[in-house]
Figure 1 (cartoon, rainbow, N blue to C red):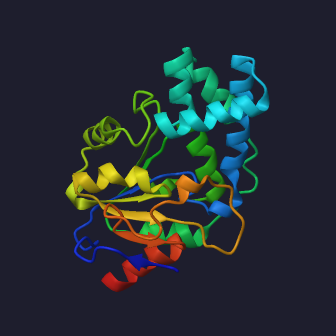
Figure 2: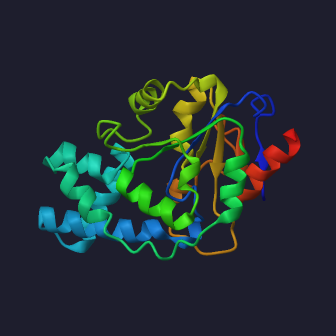
Length: 238
């Protein structure tokens, strides 16, 4: 599956702003870079709450699902400092990421603005984009700090993003690896694209994180090859 279109009426001919999630969207799921962050989150929770790894894992995943990020849960329930949390969990090895000139070329050819909307930090995004080699194609990164520490899928976060960067949702496309993070963008009028694993390599994902790949009302398109998908868009418009 390189591309499966769900709602033909919501296409790309009118799009002038391209919005991308970062982790597991702009690089392949099978890199499992987020697995490192995931492990660091568990360590942080275990140390902060003085619980064993099993209980820390349970809390981590419960907060992730209920609050959008484990950090938001820790802030809400335990008063954790977001600065301390982010500094700890993003101390990872980014070397598994390789430059992706094909993706960079495909993004460069997209007509209009390109922005990143992530639940991670700008510092983490900068390291990822440096490794991938195409960060210069993006106008800005809207991170969890810009979102007031309120992660996707909170409606307020998307509205803050649109207002901050003067984006017309009806003329924008959103690329995400979590279907639930496309619900609000779709309601706002954005064309939505779900980026899924290619199915040939092992990935570390929760079952609920894989929802939407078989079709959902708020998912206009599904792809397991983002570079090819983007290249196809510009090839058709050429």
